[in-house]
Image (cartoon, rainbow, N blue to C red; front, side, top):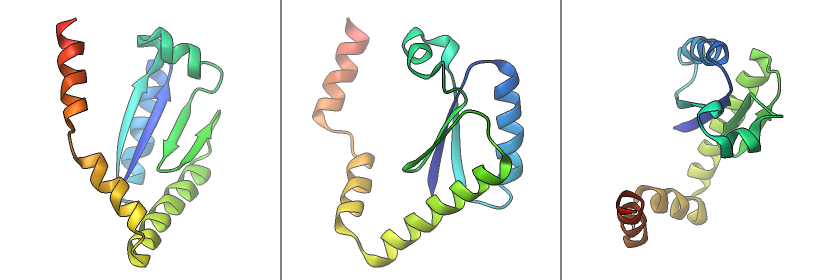
Length: 116
C-alpha cells in the first residue's frame, strides 16, 4: 500500500484534500497524511513556495493540482510497487523491511528528544 503525504498551509486546503482523498479511496488503496506547515517554522520555510506539496511514493507534485494528475500519479505509484514486488527486487524488499523495524538508534533518539 502506498502512502501519500500532503503539505498544506491553511484549513481550506486541509478540507479540500480530505474531501479529494476520501473520493479517491473508493478507487485506490492508500493511506494519507495531511501536514499543516503553518504549525512549524521549519516546514513553512521549506514548503511555503510550493504548497500544496504532495509526496506519493517516490513521486512528488507541487503547486495547484488537478484531480486527474493526482489520480495518474497514484496509479503510477501503485503500478511501481506491484512491479517491484512481482520482480522480486531484493533492495526494494530490504528498504520495506528496514522501515518496519525500530532500531536501537531510533530508541536512543526518542529517549533524547523526550528527556532534553
